[in-house]
Image (cartoon, rainbow, N blue to C red):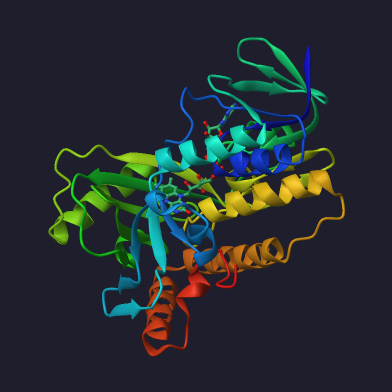
Length: 342
Ligand SMILES: Cc1cc2nc3c(=O)[nH]c(=O)nc-3n(C[C@H](O)[C@H](O)[C@H](O)COP(=O)(O)OP(=O)(O)OC[C@H]3O[C@@H](n4cnc5c(N)ncnc54)[C@H](O)[C@@H]3O)c2cc1C
């Protein structure tokens, strides 16, 4: 049986960030990815936090938006900034970029390698092959096999749906419409040659097919023709229950680190991936940025639970939030998982 210092399950942004950090320090790392290609994932590709997109090469940024358009049934706010507040990335290209960095650092990535069972010192692939580990990292997304092995419940899960339209719309928009999307929202996230038009709703709000229909109806009401665009949907786990369990670690969506309020999960996946790697390297590692991310996560989860409890309350909170943004009493930064300083 092959033995590795660290086996990482899942080659999403969390798993690849973890692999690159470990391999750059000479650790033997194997990443097991069930899909045949690293990168593509149901995702609108919006990234916040200047620290994240400043560290990506320019050609990876699809479009950047220093202006944000936010709508509720009663208000519209236009937020402007000197620097981009949100950029978009193509998940396929981001995956290729992160894969190249992890591979150059010395990590081994195996595709078409689905882990079907976990034991105390080895994982068993669907093919029946066993791979031994000293440390195991679950970076396997919102329906995580590692999380299940650890016996952690997953009850707080959001749903995201999106359609790609083959045109780059001019504006980045957020629509907080409690009547249609409960405590979630609908978005328009333009990329270079296409636009992601989608909607997110937190725990128990709506089933994916109902959200798809709602999203289509909302788009039509705003004059956006989704035409023959195929709907895509996926779960977003924000049920955070910890990330460190002896020699087993959870990263990103597997750890429930996406925002319950906005569904943002790329940044938390990358930051938690790096934090787990540094903790494997140094048991006493502490990261202030990660501590702040956990705080933001809790705040978002509390607000998501509060607004999910009552539709009228939800409307009130959303209108107050947008009023706060309009009057400058609230910062857009409060809706992000990253701190501006990162
Ligand atoms: C519609 C929608 C829109 C979104 N938009 C945004 C957005 O604009 N911005 C943002 O920040 N976030 C967004 N998200 C959330 C974001 O996609 C995730 O939070 C992010 O991808 C989490 O990264 P990860 O590395 O933890 O997991 P993932 O990216 O899910 O990667 C997990 C990997 O593990 C692999 N895997 C799973 N099980 C196994 C197994 N048993 N064996 C081997 N491999 C396995 C999977 O194939 C996958 O490649 C959106 C989500 C949805 C559904």
